[in-house]
Image 1 (cartoon, one colour):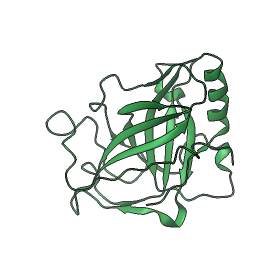
Image 2: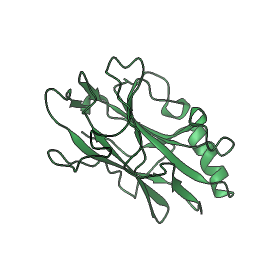
Image 3: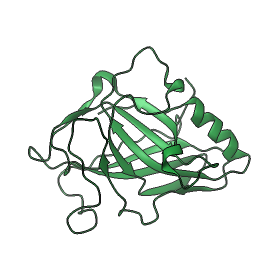
Length: 195
């Protein structure tokens, strides 16, 4: 799996401007999908092209002008596999901080032909820590929207063709990472960009 640094969307860049002026930047979700890029530029996107999984943000850790946004992925709820081709980082709209339907696609990236196949749970157990470095600039208030890190809901998106699962694992929280550990890590020197 190979993603380059995520790029700002137009809405993400507008949100960053508001955040630098004093609004809170609350990262709420990481979405994974299998959509293929068309002629539409990344900057114009407001959602993934074809989202499959929504992960709650497990942790946000500030690092100078960047924030490492982390989520935990497990394929336990997948009834069929997919090619993990796209990733999007979502943040709360400061005008609607508690309404997830208004969340903003802050930054996005597509791996195109370098997509990784994620098998169904019946084929293999896949557990990953997803970590993305996002530019936050001089923002003073950068947080996670997950009230209890590690215990948020994870769901397969409607229309994805995959089974739906809400809630956490059988024991009420995520199992320890055992079989596969990987991290998507954008190098801090690049972060979100407008290109």
